[in-house]
Image 1 (cartoon, rainbow, N blue to C red):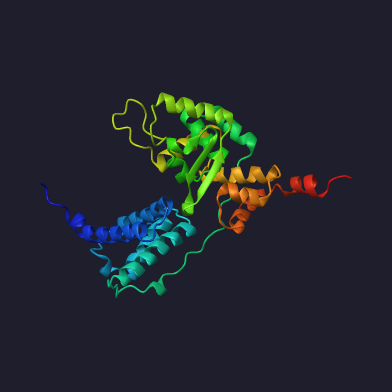
Image 2 (cartoon, one colour):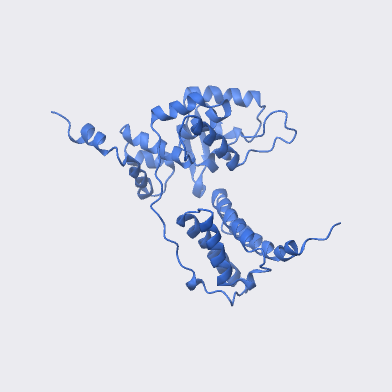
Length: 296
C-alpha cells in the first residue's frame, strides 16, 4: 500500500479531533441533520485552509486570520464567515472540556466580520409559473414541491416515500419539530408519476435510471438543477431559500395571518416569521392601497 503523503499524515489527527466533536453534536446534543451538515461544511472549509496544522493544540491566531482572508477572497459573506467562526469556537469549547488546550490561540483577538443585511429575494406566482414552464421534469418537481410547501432545501432532500399521504406530507423538520404541509393536485400527479417511473421505495431523490449505484442526490445537486431552471427563465442569483420566502410572502399577500404563516413554516417564534415581511420592500404601496386606503 502506498504510504500517506506528508500532508495527509499531518491532517489525520486534526480531522479525527473534529470528527469527535461532530459526533458529540450528533449523539449527545442530538442536533438535527441540517445543523450537523452546516457544521460539517464549516469544519471542512477550515481543514482545507489549515493544511499545515497537525492537531488542534497547535492552532494559532495567524491560522484563523489566514482562513478568514481566504474566505474573503472567495467572496464569502460576512454572515457565512461569522457562522463558520462560531462553529470553530464551539468546537474549541468542546476540546477544552476534554482537556485539550490551545495555548497559542486567543479567541478574543478574532474580530467579528461586518455583515451586510441578509438577502430577501422572493418570486411572485407569475414568475414561478414562468420558471416552471421552461423547467425540465425533475426541475419542475423539486421547484414546485418547495414552493407548495415552503421547504428548506435540506427538508426537501430528506423526503421519503413514507412521508407522503395523498396531498399531505408530514416530516420532522428543523429543531426536530413535526410539520404537516400540502401539495397541489398537479404537483401530486407529477410526483406520483416520478415515483412510479423511478421505482422509488424509500428516499425520493435518487440518481437517474441506468446509473448502477443510484445514490441519493445531494443538496448541492438539487440546488444546481433548480438554478438552471431559473437561469433558463432569465432569473439569475437564485438560491433555494428564496422559494421559502416566496411561499411565505405569497401566503401573507393573499391575506393569511402571520400566525398561520408561522405554523406552515415551522417557526418556533413569530419574530422569525416576521423577517419575511422584509420581502414586501418595494411593494408596500400596493398593500396600502388594498388594505389601508380602501374607498368606502
